[in-house]
Length: 217
Ligand SMILES: Cc1cc2nc3c(=O)[nH]c(=O)nc-3n(C[C@H](O)[C@H](O)[C@H](O)COP(=O)(O)O)c2cc1C
Image 1 (cartoon, rainbow, N blue to C red):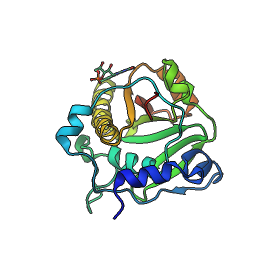
Image 2 (cartoon, protein in one colour; image 1 turned 90 degrees about the horizontal axis):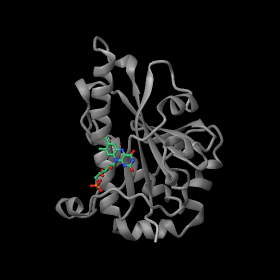
Image 3 (tube, rainbow, N blue to C red; image 1 turned 90 degrees about the vertical axis):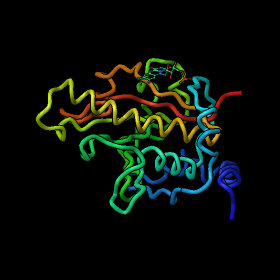
Image 4 (cartoon, rainbow, N blue to C red; image 1 turned 120 degrees about the horizontal axis):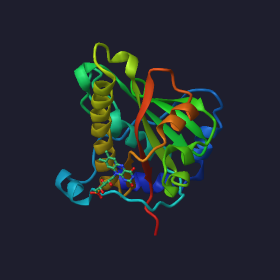
């Protein structure tokens, strides 16, 4: 069986399988991601030793298999019950994970492991206040459904949605550490502007963003 690393290297060398051209061609249709590879990776303790924030990115796109694996690790389904790789508040699905890439913004749907086109605009530069976000291949944007968090205050909504996002963010950190990818979880975001740019519904709000790519140099 091909190891995860060998498979990544093979995919990375194939221009056809890079995320940008592969997804851009699909127009407004849903994109099926390849099944995530749920075996292998570095041992946990080694991964914890490697976990860190990185802020210098190559503009090399992520192969679609790596994107698939990453999204599954972030908040994919890991049990027949439909529950996720990250814990979540009151068993209510509050957070959606969006992928902002050069070819547009995509909403990850864990149930079918697909990407829904959200917008064809390249909004990477608007996902944060730091320069590297514009050229890194992927910025994950964590968006909360406030309307699903009934009977609690706005502050509590922000709190629990932030905690849910933090767990997802740590999954992304660990996946990236295991795979030799760079990532940084980010709160330096112009939230009003990004909510507007993404044309979110009135009760939806961005909690955090997280850049992912290959380290530069
Ligand atoms: C809630 C939160 C918000 C953060 N926001 C940013 C940010 O906007 N920009 C950034 O470069 N790093 C951000 N970070 C990353 C931290 O700066 C980083 O984790 C910390 O300096 C420790 O470094 P390490 O992750 O390499 O261990 C954030 C981390 C957390 C937990």
